[in-house]
Length: 135
Image 1 (cartoon, one colour):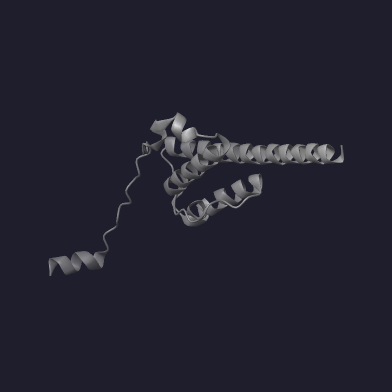
Image 2 (tube, rainbow, N blue to C red):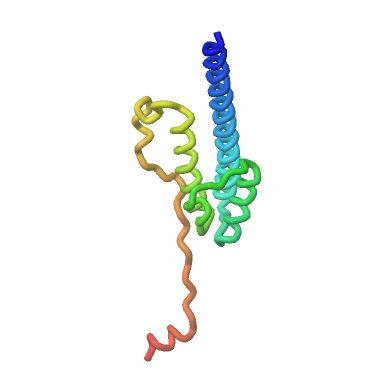
């Protein structure tokens, strides 16, 4: 009888831990999704975050919401397009952990698609460079 009670308690504890882990992953997923939505709205307006410290502020808000450290590529993103791509990769990993056999059930997930064109930075010509070319 004691053995059966212990096994039941262990099974209940495992179930609770699994449930808490699922809740944590879902909270992380929602926070990533909210961040992606903000970045997509920003990009749709033709704006972007062009500096690393701007991306760090966005990541700091995300960390505060989920209380978990994001992957390195999220933390080191240099602009909002890199951050968007890194967040999508992280989101994909969280979904893989949350939904068993997700890749087998949806084989088209392995296709790489990036719908956001990356704006090119225009380089300014310095007056010194023009003088050298003329000489």
